[in-house]
Each structure stands twice: as structure tokens, then as C-alpha cells.
Length: 379
Figure (tube, rainbow, N blue to C red):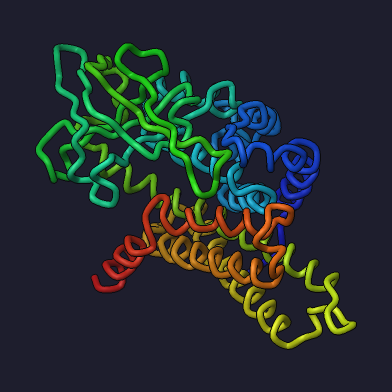
């Protein structure tokens, strides 16, 4: 087992660090305060190949694997979790769904635009009354000749307003039937398809989150991904990879918070010595570093298994569960180490703290991850 970065991973990490200094850090506080989704940043990331990391080169992507992908998300998230989250959602959810389940015509049409960030992608599963209980979704598609008419709403959708295309899972059968849902790819500007309210969030504020609204939205059957009735099954497979994305996001936020706290603890003096020399602080740092290392191993193990085409249902859930909880704990301890300054926006700890919490909720709560893991080990 080789735990060192490959040449590609080292190249990506260095590229993102340089990119962050030039294009993210100067404005990230402004984006956070105003909840601005910086589309231009993602266009630039597209030019670097980071919006189509897993997309094969024949479709305009970078053709990398999950190790490079995890590295990219983690490095972006060390700088700004919002940017890491949006990059991950674009890659693993919308783009990943089309890559995994689209036919050749759909791949040729959408992947080149998504991989270069000419288009930004969204993905819709969650509804106002069906978060973890996706089987009871109320957004419905009814067939009308060669078209399907969609009515309903999705919420908590990343890039719901700014996205150019969305993959949306809607009900085409009976409520609660896992084979009664279908995935459609729907372009912005389609009559009856619009964005609703934008959420005012605790953290991840530069990553846009809105509703998607469908009012007699007519979609041709050519826009179905896979077959009618496969949408829920597809979504669960997409989320297996998505959990690795959120584990990487969590890892990056934790690493960023730890590095900030470590540096501050060595600069901040009390009683004529740096606070890192006190056991109370040093032991916090030791716990933080150890948990980050464990989260990293779980995350890269899941990524390696995904690369090899293995079933990662359990491993991705474990990585997502542990890394997200570690992210919250590490960010919390970072605020504590910064003391009063950790509670102010003049220092980075409070933003890591706010951003970290979403990781335990998005793409399956910690409780859902435990459900997935327990079912896997109790088979």
C-alpha cells in the first residue's frame, strides 16, 4: 500500500493552492457575506480540467480517477468549503449521473459542456417533505405521447438557479415503489421549469442552494436517463460516489481548520510562551491530527475501491460518516484554540466551523450513513 501522492495528485494539489491564492482567497469573505455564487471561479476551474475530473478525455474531461478527484476536492475545501462543495456537486451528481447512466447521444451532448464548465450542473432528489425518505417524493411525471409532463418541486438543490442543466429524479409510478421513479435531464429555459427561493444558510454560503419548480413542464422521452422506473436505483448508485465527495470535502475543511489552529497556537503567547506548549492545547492538536489521518485513510480507501470498480456502498458511507463528524469536531476545537478570536470573522476558524456542519447532513445524514453501514454488516 502506497500512501504517498502520485505525480498527478501532487500536480493537482499544487495547482489548486496557487489557484486559491489568486482567485479564491481575495474574495471568499465577500462571497460568504453576500451569498454570491462566483460562477467565474468555476469557469476558471473548468479551464483547469477540474469540473470534469472523472469525465473521459473523449468527452472533454480530464480522464482522472477518484484519487485525483478526492485530492482536488480536499485541496479546494481547505481554502473554502463552499467552492469545494459546488465543485463536488457538479462533478459527482449531475455530471456523474449522466456519465454513468446516459446513452451515447446524451453523453456527447452534455458532458463536453459540463466538463469544461461551459455549463454548470444541478441534481435534484430532495423535496420539502421528503429528505431521507426519497421514496415518498411528490414531484410527478405523467406520460403524454412522446413527452412527460412534470409537476412538483425540489429543494436544497445546489446550483438550482445558476445551473444550465439539471438531472432530476421524479415519480412515474406508485408512492414508495423503488422502481416507480425516473431520472430526467432537463435544460434551463425549458417551459415550466424554474428556480424558486434561494436558501439563507448558516455555512457554505457561496455555494448556491435553491428550489426547483415544475409547472406542467413538458420533457421529451429522449431526456430520460436509462429506463423508466430506474431513477431511484440510479440515484442510490450515484450517491455511493457522492459520499466519497463529501468525505473529501469534510477532510479538506478539517485540514484547513487544523492548519489554521496549529499555526495560531504557535504564534499566540500566554504566560510568556506559545499556547501550543501547554498540554491542554497540545493534546487537542494531537487528537485533531489523529482523527484527520484516520478520516483520510477511510476516504482514500473508498476512492481506491471505486477506482477498481468494487462495490463501495459500505466503505463510502463509513468514510462520509467518519470524515464529516471529524470535520465538525476539528472545526469546533479550532474555534476553541483561537479563543475569543475564533468567534470573530477576522480569523478563519468560525467559517470552517459554520461550513463543517453541512457535511453531516448533505448527501445523506450521519444517521442515514449508519443505516447504510448497519445493513451492509448485518446481511
